Length: 256
Ligand code: MG
Image (tube, rainbow, N blue to C red; front, side, top):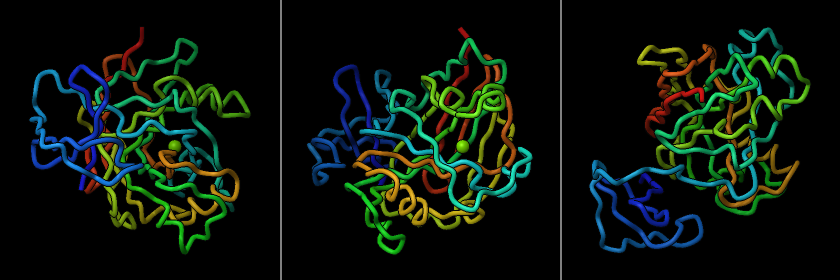
């Protein structure tokens, strides 16, 4: 099952993605059972726009240095416990939305990541039961102002700006994410090519760990870290982040 959020000009709606068709469902599937309305919308319809499949209700939780080869390329050690940071939900944009480079950064990097969408109120859940609290998975791009990240101790500005969290193209519930390929392409050239099996801390462990810090709400999102190969993007680039069995999240990059 793939669950998309979309608009054809009016309020956002949800749909199941079946081949090249959206099967529209009533309400928000995070909070109510999936119920098709009978309406079907072709995916290639001119006025159709896919939106971020979820707007995190309270937060996006990021995890730093969760792939050893990425920690190494940045000259860092792998932390003993997951290194959490937050992105505000105002950072979220959807498929094909432009990543607008902030005026105050000269070096913005992209990071392809598996994203976990929380499905239930989650507090102090043990890792053995953590996956029950997961609604599904999507693709994220943890866009980072690398020069600012290097210059400042806190990552709030470097990773929290508007547009720094593209999500999409849809949510896949019930996926086995233990060993999926994670790639990033810029203008068609592969920059990152890793596997979720190389994560230092796996999904269940991350959900459990985060839930000991703050209550996770339905619709909150956890970014699970990025493999090696991060690099700069500039005005005019097109970034595609892909997680196997989920899909491709594509965003153009612009500088205003
Ligand atoms: Mg990251």
